[in-house]
Amino acid sequence: MRQFPLEMHHVAPGRVVEWRLRSASAEAGGTDDPASRKASFNQDKHFTVAEESRAADDPVASWVAVTFEVTGPLDEDALAQSLLSFVRRHEVLRCAFRRLAGELACEPFDPAGLALDPLDVGTFETAELLNGFLVERFRQSIDTLSWPLFIMGAVIREDSATVYLTFDHIVCDGMSMPIVAREVMTTYEGLCRGEDVELPPAPSYLDFADEQRRRYLSIDASDERLDYWKAFMGPAGEFFPRFPLNLGVEPDRMYPIVNEASLLLDAGEAEVFEKTCLTVGGKPFMGVLASVAVCLREAGGPGGYRGLMPVSERGRDTWTNSVGWFVNTMPIEFDASPGRDFAQVMASVRAGFTEMIGHVDVPFVRAWELLAPKEFAARSWPHPVNFFSYIDMRKCPGAERHEEWRPTTHVWSARANGACSWFQRDTDGLHMNSLYVDTPAARRTMGDFQEVLRRTLQEIVRSGGFRRPIALTPPRRPVGTPLDVAAYVRRR
Image (tube, rainbow, N blue to C red):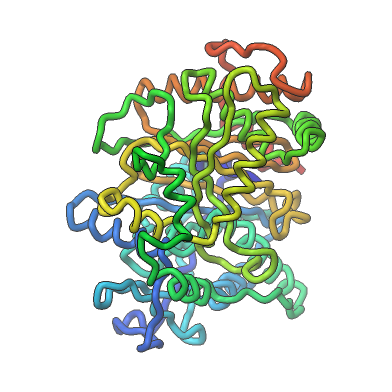
């Protein structure tokens, strides 16, 4: 399982059917829970930005999607039942969000009152026409301020089908996507066999949000739990660490995005890379982060790495199978100055990560609100921010079936003012997906950075470290193409 742009996804043509979620309470303008519950800090900020953007006639949009494959003729009724069961199981998916007395309320609908209405969208004769439809469908249909907050459908062929679900970020995170694929497919396969499937417990994200708000809503800027953030901000008081390379952006301006993905290491190289990292006492994600830091430094950035890193809040057991936005974002810093070898930089990464994890309890949005109130009032981050994310998809729920289901994750945002990169490890290797501003400078910067990073990682695989200089402007290999992805999707 990996993450790449929807535009790169080769989905074979076929007949498209969607299932629209319906609730009698929603149609009547009410909910089944008059007491309601409070949204999480992540949800509240996301919804606020959507409200303010709509009021300014400057709408923003983003979504997270998952697609996966069904082998053999599709049983449409069984899939519809599986999708409805999935929505009923996860309370956050059947919530309406409303602003009440200044706070954002989550008002869940009764699961028994939900139903799905099938809609035959039409038949698409070519993959190009189908891809164009899906891209526009996802972009036009997800609205943070309107319920429901996701769409569900399938591309049906005689001997196979591709199922898709697309969500507004307010109800899920990237790590929810493997859960979606496993749960829908496990239930579907059980229904096709005529068997009842018992799924593992999945506590409600609304319970998580309630607990989080009770713990952190009352803290103020003097709370000692914010000391790590304050130390990171330093004398300059800068909450958001800057992306250190030139992206050619102007202050207070948002840009259309480039969304691209490529392979950094193949499966064999990724195995060697992991062993090399373990040899020097680190983990693969630390090795990738160390390599990113060195490449940024060699391209003109500082020797001290400073960035933001998303951290899962699911815990080891409690929320493992729950859908929701279980992500905290934390600052990390470490030394990657010239002259330090791979083992030394890795030791710095390990120390920086250990320190970060020791202070991970305070929610990012709450720290932002208390320590950078001026920036918090804005609708976007104030400048390009250094951001790093890594996920080993082989450890996700349902990974043992990924070869059969071939799930893929796709993210999209309408506009941005910087760059974000996600790294994923799967059975095919190490991959990179980046969203960044569509400017000439950013295209040059990110293209060169991606290629230098690839060469740096390959050098570590070959020699065990940063043995020799990596040219900053090498001949570029092409980034991922639709054919690359098609080979992944259609194999077997």
